[in-house]
Image (cartoon, rainbow, N blue to C red; front, side):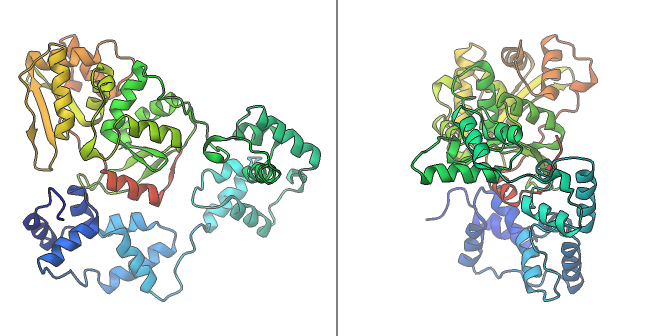
Length: 445
C-alpha cells in the first residue's frame, strides 16, 4: 500500500536534482526506505560515486581526530550513514572506538579532578564516555589521589543506604549523602530483589536526574500551556519526551525544565533540519514511562493524527502554547497579524475555539507546499486573538510575548515588532529521533 501524501514525480525530481534521501524522506514524514521503494518502483537508478577519494580520506582523517559523524555529514552534505560506510570500508586503522577520550580531554579531566571535582560530576560533561573509562584513565595516567579513594561499602553502610531508599530518598540524594556511585546503589537494590524484597523506584531503576513525574497530572494553566507547546514542538518516543528548539530559544527550554522540577541536561546538536540547513538546536529529553503514557493519552501521538481532547482544546493556555511552538505573530505596515500551522485536524479545533470565544467564525485554513496547513488573519481579528491568548499569560515564549504585549497595548512603533516571519527552525519527528540516537554534545546550561 502506497503511503498517503507521497508524490512519486516530486520524489524522483528532487532525487535526480541531487537532494539527499534523508531530507526528502523527512519532508514527506516517511522513512528513507519508503523513498528508495519509490525510486525502485519507477526504475530510477541509485546515485553512485558521489564522494571522491579525497573526500573519503578527509572523512577518515576527521573521524580519527574525534569529530562526530553527524558533524562530518553536515559539513560534506551527505548522510550520517554514508560517513559510517566510508569508515567501515576504509582499512587504515583509523576506525575510532566509541567512548574513547582524546589526549586533550584526558588532560582536561585530570585538571578538574586535581582541583577536587568529583569524578561523577566530571563524567556528566562527557556523555559518550562511561564513568569507568574515566576511572581507568586516571589510574593509567597515575593521577588518582589515594586520599580520595573511597573505602569499600561495608555491611553497616549498605544497611544505611537501603534504609534511606526505603524511607523515600531518591537515588541522586543517596549517592550524594553516602558518596557512592549509581552502580553501588543499583547493586544493593538487585541484592534486595534476590532476597525477596522489592523496593519500588520509578521505571524499576535508579533515577539519575530529578523529575516531577506528576507535572502533567493536574491540568493547571501552566500544564495546559506546556501541553500545547509539546503538541507543536515535541514528540513522545517509547518512555521519553523529546522537545527540540532552535538554539535561540534555549531559555524557553529551561522554563520547561523548571516546570518539570528537573535537572536533566539541555543538549545541543548540529543536526541538519530539512527546512534550514544552517540551524543548530537545543533539546531536552526526560525519561518517564508515566509521563510518556499520560501524554499519549492526551493526544500527543504521531503528528499527522494528533487531536487534542476537549479539556485541552477549550483552553486559551493550550492554544498559546501551540502558537508559541508552531505559530507566528507580529506587525507589518502597522497591521497586526497572527497565524498557526499544523495538520487540518488540529486547525479545525482551533477554529472551534475561536467560535466558542466569539472571536470569529469566518477563518479558514489553507494547505501549504510542505503538506501541512495554516490559518492566519490580520488587523482587529488578529489583535483579538492575541489579546485572548497572551493577556496576563502565566508563561509564554519571550520573543513572541514581547510582540504580543506591544500589540495588546497597540504600540506599533517598536522595532521588535517588524520583520517577523514564520521561522521553520524545527526538526521533524524523524529528525528528532535520529538526533536522540546520535546524542551529540552536552550543552552546559
